[in-house]
Length: 211
Ligand SMILES: Cc1cc2nc3c(=O)[nH]c(=O)nc-3n(C[C@H](O)[C@H](O)[C@H](O)COP(=O)(O)O)c2cc1C
Image (cartoon, rainbow, N blue to C red; front, top):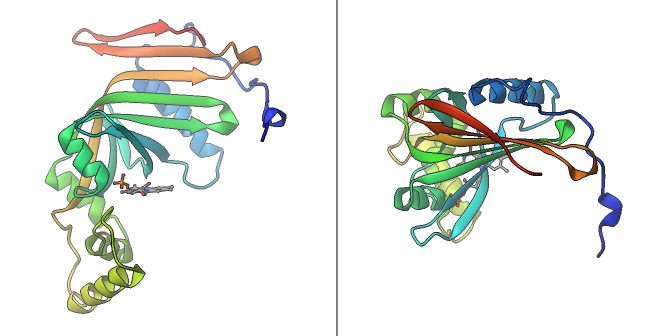
């Protein structure tokens, strides 16, 4: 099937050195805020790319929980496929695509678990049902049928009916500490703007990449 009819021009904006801040976190915050203001579902969804111990790539969507100069945080099951890959190969890339703004952001760096206290905070902010879900699901494991998790949810709900549900050890946050951040702004005739920031001990340096 040919898909030529899906072709479009990118004209929503420009990314020029003269207007881009020296700190990429500032630029991320501006772009992200604008994407959130656009409305729509899952505005904090991002692609998380990891690779296993042999370097074979993998990717899935996760939700960004917070970000600051220390890095970008999401939460998951530490024993999931991604959790096992991260333990074997602690590097990750995060990818954001904001279609209405014609923008893409790639964030590369080392990845590590956040502190237990920080994971507790993320967990306790979840509604009770999601906490029980995180507790009950052996994420990424093969299960015989849906009933397996439903029965576990029912058993946990009953056993902990009058108890505060606290974080299980297999669940928590990860933080990607950015070393490289690339911003892409779609432009006419595919002559897009790309600015790549790289962190060194002296701070961030910036270069322009060919589209
Ligand atoms: C919009 C969206 C948001 C998601 N958010 C998360 C998340 O924050 N954490 C998570 O573990 N999985 C999340 N998932 C599910 C993952 O994409 C994935 O199916 C799951 O984490 C298992 O991945 P793994 O087998 O690579 O470990 C989300 C999926 C979608 C489509």
